[in-house]
Amino acid sequence: MSNLTGHDAAWREWHAALASPRLHHAWILAGLRGIGKAAFAQQAAATLVAEPGVAQPDSRAHPDIITLEPLPANDDEVKKQAEGKPFQLKRNISIDQVRRMQQRLTTRPTLGSRRAIIIDPADDLEKGAVNALLKSLEEPPVGTFFLLVAHRPGRLLPTIRSRCRVLRFDPLDSAQIRRILEQDVPEASVETRAAAALAAAGSPGAALDFVAHDLGRIHTLMGQILHDGDPGFALRGALAEAIGARPDRERQLATIELARAAIAAGLRQAERPSQRRMIEVHAELVRISGQFVTYNFDAGLLVLEIGGLLASVAMPREAA
Image (cartoon, rainbow, N blue to C red; front, side, top):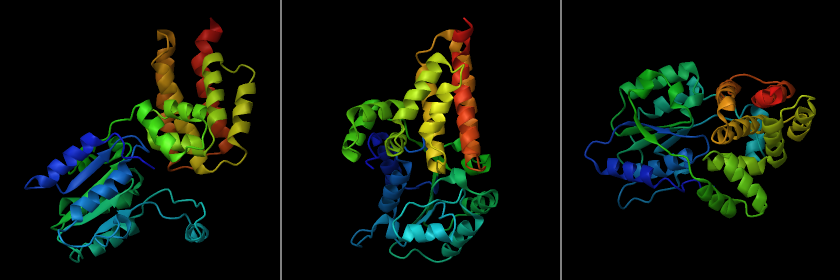
């Protein structure tokens, strides 16, 4: 994905920090999910550990760049990964992963004087993993630097945030996202790309998910429910059919985020009587999205809840 588009300001701040005599040892890369923080972290880590005159492997294979991210959910998913098939991930980054990383910190970097630790995303650290990481942030080994990808930095412990410098990633505009979609998914229709760019709320990753999960029909139904309500539950039934009987977790999460984006986009154009309810619905969708990482949701009930929240926005108009 061409997901570094639009992050010139972040790069300027990062290069200025690299050129300074004292580079801060821990950074939070904060911004929307899918905006390009993970790719930035990999490239930033590569610039951090590079040594003049020393050949550098790709960041994913670099011995001095350690990336912690959710692992395949089980042995079957490990096999799917090895075979190049789609696979499910665990919900969290475990304390064992952090401890294995810390064991590596007892040795010196391999190719130079610096080592980078990427945690993607830090939002998904287990509670025990957070406490273990805090010890490394408090007393980092010389030459070790941390890049914490965070979709919702407010969920990180204050003790973590206080030890990190924040690098913020602003949402991209619709034109930038359309250019990314034109390059990465040229086979998608112009209408699908335009709708994806609008619904993505500034996140190219969300836009690509929109296209990959074929959410165009779902987006249309959400717009109808928002505008007209759904007193007979027919639209909610169509929404459940469009999502599918057994959607995987990625499709469910994409649907939640799409509903949140639809509310956010509608809020800017809504009349005052509807704005308060839209704000309440948006907050509820944010809560559901946050819980989704931890809990198993029944897909059918999830669709009904999302549809009900969207329909509630139209209730004042129905009453009128």
